Length: 337
Image (tube, rainbow, N blue to C red; front, side, top):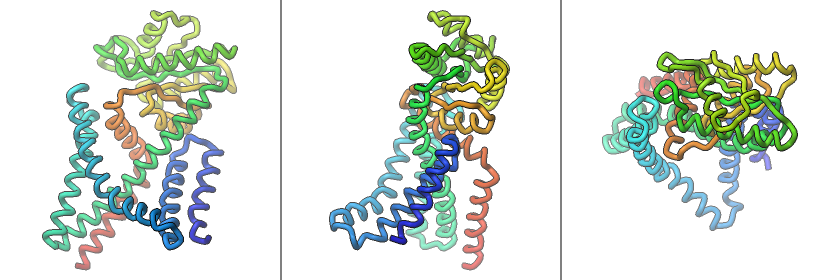
């Protein structure tokens, strides 16, 4: 039973972290380490498993990292082509394509190292695999916990809230609400109406400033969108100074604290953005959880990669430190050849 002590420790850390605050990236890491350590423990106990279970476990260990990686790369490349066709050429829209090509490039280097028997290339590939493995582990943790948080967020939205905060995004032609932003607004309206049905009449805050290529603030365009569709104008407050998600939350928090100290709120954004918004809500001291509105399936991969990259860079000292350490270990191994 000692083999399950490490999974038990990570389970304890995960539960304690969730009880303290669900809006922590550390919870995602603990969950990932729990899954890995539990898998290792199960593999270590394979002699006590039924033969069928051992065969399935062996097949998973062999096939998932190989076929799964190749399938993922192809799907990301196809998604990247779809993004370029539907959303236009820009770096954010290229992310899934670039990641897919990067995976295939790494696989190609692995094949070349195996056939050429080059020790230098083998060390380089090994180092790249370790760095990629570290980043991939964090990414899987991010996606897995974001899914769980999204489920919890929907439950949270059912509780009482004094405010519903809808986060802004860019306007089409500098003045019109985009389909992406419209989905946030419609979801915000739905959250508001569920609150009203329970006897709680919250204030809806539209949050978004005016960009250099916009003719009016996102908050104003969002408020116009809602009132044109019958939403009560006297229940809308505009936060029109923010330029980033962090500012969305910081300025909205000031409005809520001034209007109702001890407030509770529900923050509405798109589903791919919900977990990062929750992390920022925690860091800015906003008393509320985040719910996500529906996003078109083709848009989700690139958007999720972009969200993860932002979280990764938010902890750049630790993450780049780990990557640098792996690189130094690879350099030391090459030096000893």
